[in-house]
View 1 (cartoon, rainbow, N blue to C red):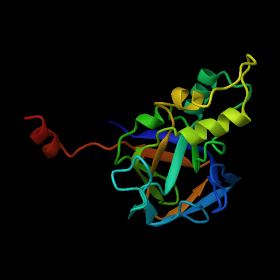
View 2 (cartoon, rainbow, N blue to C red; view 1 turned 45 degrees about the vertical axis):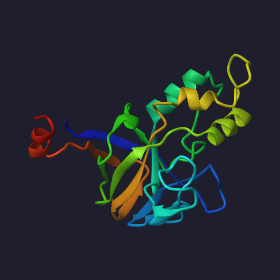
View 3 (cartoon, rainbow, N blue to C red; view 1 turned 90 degrees about the vertical axis):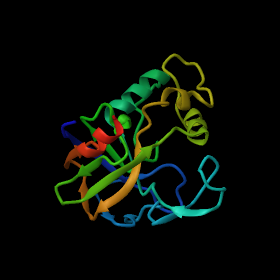
View 4 (spheres, helix red, strand yellow; view 1 turned 180 degrees about the vertical axis):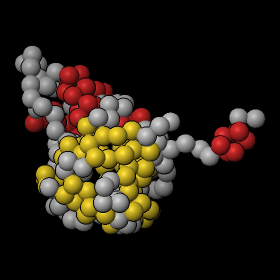
Length: 196
């Protein structure tokens, strides 16, 4: 698969006191333990319901950053019939990219490369959660006037919620940066071995 070139539409940091929303900023500093100033910055985290480990287990933090795309946000907005633009900040994302319409389908191991030399590696798809769906139902309205249900976001964003991952190489990420995305591909000898 060839590289994908996109652009950083906006960047966000969520302070330790904020549960879901994040604040817009001009740039973020990515360090090996996460994004400076963000509440998810750490090499470890506690597991929660749905993780493979028992809830509360200290484990590696594979969620140092999160990203969504303008195109997928527009799709979710349309599916939910929202009366205003759905924003990356309201979904608690650190990065909003444009030019990557199938962002959520990028596989684990995909690398995002930024002009500063910073690299982010995809760990997994970020599935929509019930708490986020309930929050959006209480803060957004539909164009048709119908009330949003508490699980409408979870249904609309089922395959387009974005990605989470780790910092692979430290550096600065700016709003407006071009990002080169290198989708993960298994090495040829491994692919041949698996396909035997």
